[in-house]
Length: 288
Image (cartoon, one colour):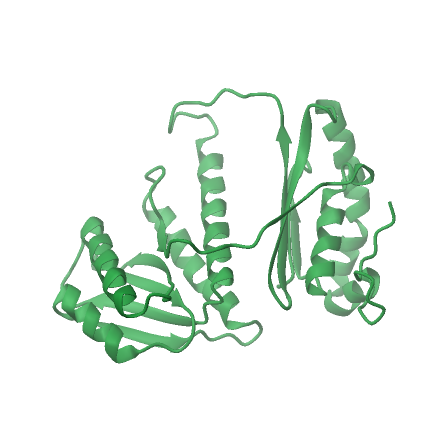
């Protein structure tokens, strides 16, 4: 099957030209090695499975001009035995995977809402009970949405050195600071809020918030190893774009190449890619 990297647009850069323009010399060299590495991965996969027993799942997400990502995984059709919670011999690997999943979900929500401002809610009192902090946030959100039904947020909690909790929220657009402060004080009695535009020298504000809140999310995992804990909160009903793509047969074992091409077509550039050593999973995005 013949596939056009520039989507048929004669003015769009070709995959090769765009790669040379946006990637450093070392990254361009890595890109040239993708096909060789993918071919080796295909051999390993063929030794383990057959086409009728498993498949690749490729999901493309387009968040707006210049922002796209594609992730893929090799899904086996063979059932596997699941260990009891917390008793798996690969428990640390599973925890690491949980961190990656949570950070991915956080990233998707922030990019989908086009959040570009950071709202911080703090207490004057030393609130150390996380359940209390969660109830306060829920009441704050409920009161804000009574006044602003379309208001959306993505929130991550951070614990200070003294043990007190506070909240970091990614929100979209300029905020009514007076209203938010009034509502927060109504909920907690004594505290403060701060609203600021996300700062970034190299990327857009949404990506800056992804990195900032992702750091606190990872910190929360490091401090609390409780399984299945709710690591962050977000508005209900946020629609995260997702297009499920079928991996053509000629790309068998070359899912990374396929993902890179799809991101290039959607966003016009590729910034970063990663693939598991055995070729069973990978991720490509348009930013660095």
